[in-house]
Amino acid sequence: MRAAVLSLLSEGARHGYAIMNDLAERSGGLWRPSPGSIYPVLSQLQDEGLVVAEESEGRRNFSLTEAGRAYVTEHPEEMAEPWRAADGGPARRVQAIMAGMAALGAAVEQVARHGTEAQASAAGAVLDDARKRMYRILAEDDAEPGE
Image (cartoon, rainbow, N blue to C red):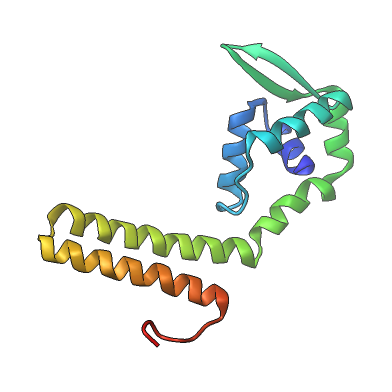
């Protein structure tokens, strides 16, 4: 997390929520940091003299100090590591499953908005079955519903 935050700040000042959003976006949704994980890192980086916070338009914007810029320049491998981890298999897997979920959500929305009562009821049953099957996958249980 530390290297990822420093890497982002090397591109320009950001407020905490922008850092959280950028991390989620660049990791393909693999990282979804909370304020409880970002702000302690920012506080630690401030204590180390690598980051400074300035108030602007009601927000605390964080930027690298001279020491922070030097640290980033002197540790290029460390700065690249978070993005290598995000480029690997887990990120692609999450992205593929979430893309399928988005496509399913679009179909569900169409049935909910334009389907008949019977179609909506059938869709609800399919979704309930899909949820149960997802948990069976995690449990490595190959049994079909009703077995």
